[in-house]
Amino acid sequence: MNWQEPARCLVALGEGVLAGATGRYAKRLVELQGLYADEAAFAAMLPGRGETVVYEVTEFRPSGRSGDMIFGITRMVPGQVGREFFMTRGHIHARADRPEVYYGQKGHGLMLMESPEGEIRTVEIAPQTICYVPPFWIHRSVNVGAEDLVMMFSYPADAGQDYEIIARSGGMRVRIVADGSGRWTQVDNRSYRRRSADEIGRLAGLAS
Image (cartoon, rainbow, N blue to C red; front, side, top):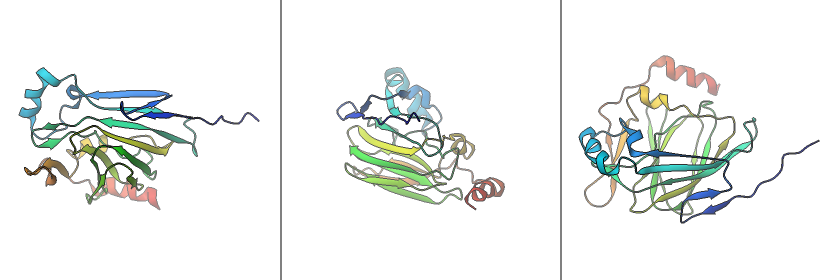
C-alpha cells in the first residue's frame, strides 16, 4: 500500500503566505467590480489602485478526495471603498454541508456569515482567534483593521465553492462599513434579494 505522505508547511507571517503551497491566487481591486455599494468611489479608485491586490490565498491541497483536508493562508490588505471595508467575494460551499475553520494570525477582521434565510452572524477575528463556520452558512472575510489581515483556513477537500449564491441575491444582506469613530458597523444592503423558497428548500434538503 502506498500511503499518502505527511506534509509540513511554514507560514511566512510578515508576507502573509504559506511556504510550500501547491496553489496561489490573488484578487486585484479591478477584478472586484460590482462588489461594493459605492460604485462612484470604486471607479475613482481604479486609476491609481486598480492593480492593488486586495487579497490573496496560498493553499495546500493534498488531494480532492472525501475525507482529506485543504488548508492555507488568506492575506487581505486594509482599505475601504467609500465607507465599506475591503472584503473577499465570499461563498457557500458547493457541498453546502461542509464546514470551515479560520484561525486569526495577524490584524483585525470579521467573518460575516449569512444563513440561507438571511440571518446574519459576525465573528470578530484577531490573532489567536478561531472562527468556526458551520455547514450551510455563506461567509466572507472583511478587514476592518489598519494592517494586513492574515488568517489560516481549513476545510474538507471535497467542499468546493459556490460564489454565485451571493451574486444571485444582489450581495449579502448587510454590508460592513466604517462608523465614523474608528470602528465598524453593519448596514442593510439595499440591493439584497431574499432567496426563493425553492432555493432554501434545496439547501435544507441536503441537511436531512
